[in-house]
Length: 150
Ligand SMILES: [Zn+2]
Image (tube, rainbow, N blue to C red; front, top):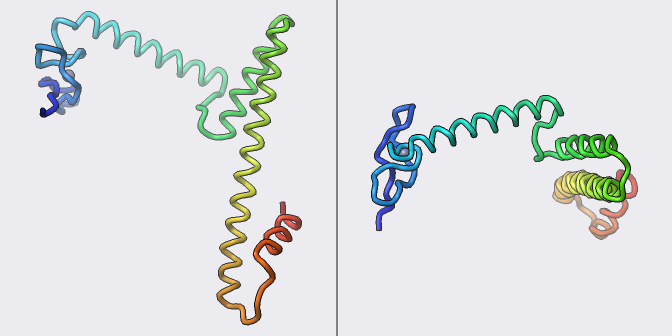
């Protein structure tokens, strides 16, 4: 069965690709019967986006994708939690924040070590292609490299 799409057009004039509601050719956003609900949903969506932007600016939290972003959010959470009255629950939250921060740090250090080892492996491969006498074992080389550089 071919999938149906809404027969309305978007504000940009493109065909709307949303799934139509049952028994009408329009999606929730374009069905005249659901216009009041759709307007309310748009209003709430706008409020939510504005709130998200305001909070992002106020806390300087730009996302949770990079290690730096995760650390920033954990810092905000720690500071906000520290500002609360001391309770066993507050201590548990702070402990959990520390645990999570350690995980973030550990994963950042692993990323760094893997990148360094990959760079080393690429260099070793090039050196190997130019080598005439046999090398030490790869394990010895990698261990020596880690001792010297990491
Ligand atoms: Zn539509």
